[in-house]
Image (tube, rainbow over all chains, first blue to last red; front, side):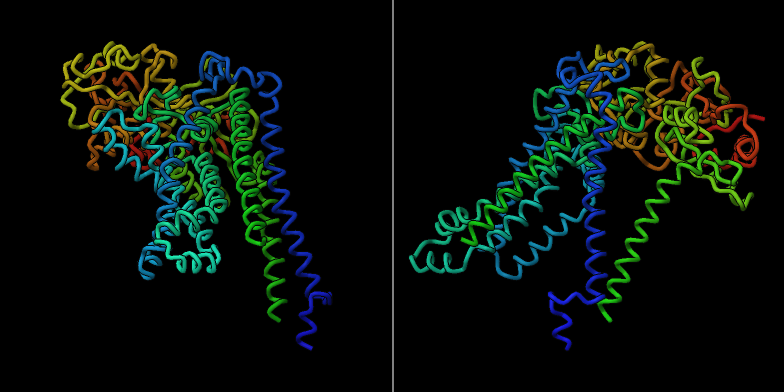
Amino acid sequence: MILSSNNISSHSKTDLHFLWSLRVLAVVAGSLLVLIIGFILRESWPALTHIGVARVFTDPGWFPTEHSYQLTPIIVGTMLAACGSILLAAPLGIVSAIFCHFYAPPLLGQWYRHMIELLAGIPSVVFGFWGLVVLVPLIAAWHPPGPSLLAGILILTLMILPTIMLIAHSSIAQVPAAYIHSATALGLSRWAMIWHVVLPVSQIGVLTGIFLGLARALGETMAILMVCGNVVQLPSHMFDPIRTLTANIALEMAYALGSHRSVLFMSGLLLMGLVICFVSVAEALRHKANYAVAK
Amino acid sequence: MMMRTLVHSLLSTVLLIGLAFAHELFGVVTVSQAQEGKLVITGSSTMAPLLLEIGKRFEANHPDTRIDVQTGGSSRGIADTIRGLADIGMASRALTPEESPLHGTVVAYDGIGIILHASNPIQKLTNAQIRSIYSGETTNWQRVGGRDAPITVVNKAQGRSTLELFLQYFQLSNRDIHAHVVIGDNEQGIKTVAGNPNAIGYVSIGTAQYDASHGLPIRLLPLQQVAASIDTVRTGIFPLSRPLTLVTKSSPTGLTKTFIEFAQSSRVHDLILQQYFVPLQN
């Protein structure tokens, strides 16, 4: 009796209740995203139609109170910070994952993994505060003014390292044991096995992690706002301050009125588009990886 | 049995989320009904902590009322008051002539002070020197009698009333300013200057004096030979100061009037001093 009531093909009353509450919850979760995108579209509509996307690249500068809305330096700053942090975090994350899985003694490996998980749980404002009172003064002593693209890249690296490391670690752990045993049986050194067997097999999973990290780096706001200096300019080197799209929205939204507000929503739309792109690439890669493993 | 409990808890979660949404949606509707005993106050982030404290004391004296304080800057306070989204707007500046249909009541004063790192040997700067530093003509402390080090200029983000007042006083436009760091709130500015021996910034004197007296390495510069302190702002001799204004759509009535009179009275002077602002003299 007990078994049959758990049968998925029998629709008991409890099952139906459960099924419908799940359906309602799923619709709520899904429609929230649609609502948010719809809302951002509605708020940025005046900017899209009256100001136009072209002026974002052709206006003389970002002086919203004087109706000049050039976003190019901000877009470039956002991309530089995100890509710079990926360049640092990706090798670090992959190496940490390899160390954790193949080289560290089990106890140390486990401990190390927990540390990285903890790093993922630190609120971004704490990273920002630490950056502001520790990292920025250090950079200022080395090469003033301190708040800079470099500070942003370093803080972002710390924040996306766990994402990249944990995803790389789990996809390395998924490499079939038979591959590893065969490589060992062939007498490959540990490094040769990692380089020629483990990494090629798990590369799609690792790439997924990198794209998710990139999406997070693009969307990060609070920490970036506190360490990047927020000056609207094209940086000529690592020590120049920059402003990112997220910081721009956070700094000005509360004070923005009219078309300024609408342009900020438009930049939010742009940001959302970029993040959706990266997350979809990551998802597509993940499907490919699942398919490859299934094969 | 387990399943039923699970279903119930899921359903009650859905119900709670729904209720939260309903509250968000209808929260806006209840705003204009000041007679019901709720006042919504929005605006200047400088004034919000003070109004929060005044609101708490007001609620204690008038048990049936609720004071809801939200920040977002003086511009938002004024815009919300015009649109009827707030009963009272907070503006940390005097009303401009275009805003004259609104009714403003000053409850306290605040001064804007220039701050340097405590280790910076500079003891005073003229208005012309400060203007030249902010417009990027002077880029090394040596030029104004300091040590040989590049100046880090800390500016405020657009829309903040502190920035507007600073620009107006030094007759600069935001385009002219050559900043190295752009900050949001006062505390971020103070932390930035405290962490950089060669930085110059400007923040509320109240906040700066509080942080300096609590061991942060920053120093307030005098302006036109007037020391930047709570006392000089109170007596009105400090040149760069601003009135903290409560804004209403028309001459206040009912609960709004009672609250504004309370905020002006000597019963909240201790709260104003606690926030390092300067109460009205009466």
